[in-house]
Amino acid sequence: MRLSTLIVGELILLCASILVFRSVWTLLDEYFGKSNLWPMLILGVVFTVIGLVLVNYEVKCELQKKRQ
Image 1: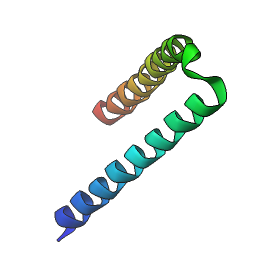
Image 2: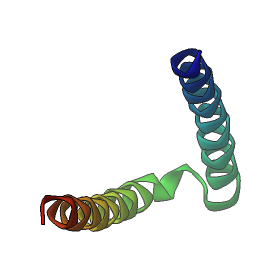
Image 3: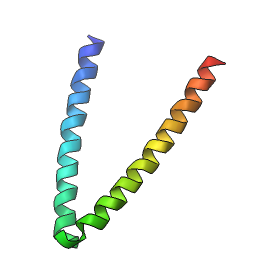
Image 4: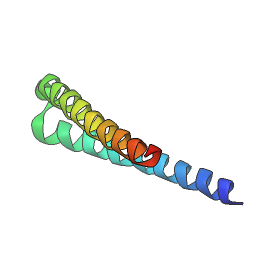
């Protein structure tokens, strides 16, 4: 029963993230125009890399704590 609840929760989060992404994309097009898509893409990639590095560092720290 717990696994099915987890799967339903993940599906809900997936659908919600698609809706949020789509609405943010539409708002950015409306306010900044399509001419600024390249700088926003580069900024998004930079933020993604920074976020992944931070998450990876925290997971690595937690795994080292569990091993000790």
